Image (cartoon, rainbow, N blue to C red):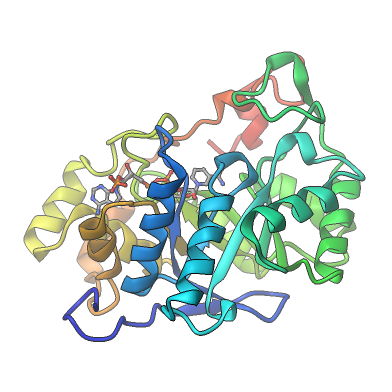
Length: 328
Ligand SMILES: NC(=O)c1ccc[n+]([C@@H]2O[C@H](COP(=O)([O-])OP(=O)(O)OC[C@H]3O[C@@H](n4cnc5c(N)ncnc54)[C@H](OP(=O)(O)O)[C@@H]3O)[C@@H](O)[C@H]2O)c1
């Protein structure tokens, strides 16, 4: 089933990455459900998404969705929904307690085992902070935060890439300043920075910085992460977006995803509902007008996902300002 008209699935536009040789589909399906859902529901959602034409899937060691995503990929192959694993772009992330010298490679190997894959397409450092090794609790206990040794952790991310366990490597929730720290010692620059990005938090400075360094920005909470513990309905309920959507006969979600696409970033959208998955795909056959873009550019800006869970008097970031290096 096509997301638009009922024939073969339409192909999602892709972007090249600065290393690794793989192209990333510019719209991907998020798999972090909040509240969490049973693994079977994640597997079914991924299979439906593959049928609809999604090829890019985002997971993380933290989400507990690597296994059902891997199960869905195996089933998609056995059912002939895809001919080869290479048709998919799979991202996973290194959790804070594994962000230590000597633990990065084993963490990726564990993710690969969960996913039942020989390699992933992109491996990201999930947050710019480490925590006590061996514990996977979330939220992280305040006394268990540790500063990350960016040089050592990034060197091991590079080793993961050299060994072919991941095609590309990148970061998530990194400010311009923290990316600069990585770049200062990197042999391979990050290919991606995955961050909150939507019309209410347009990341103008970070977007420019990443473009200048050929780092592709990936949007999470592109719809504001409604209904999750880290998001709200402020994006989907934004009056300016509602006006544009109504006048164009689109939904606010489609306006957000189209806008992200036109900003030159790749976007993730999480939906486990087939109709909304279809709706979110219908963004590639029309454009926002100059006037609509102007209206969006004038929306007052603030972060929705502040990252309070990563702030600790015992850790490297004692305030939200420190976590984001003042990029508020
Ligand atoms: N790197 C990080 O630190 C980080 C942080 C957060 C998220 N992520 C990743 O990014 C992915 C996407 O971000 P997100 O899940 O935070 O937020 P999101 O995609 O902005 O929002 C997801 C929420 O929106 C609903 N939704 C989806 N499409 C909709 C539509 N067309 N109309 C109305 N509601 C719609 C979903 O509900 P239904 O499922 O019921 O449709 C879900 O409640 C995550 O799943 C995860 O993979 C990464």
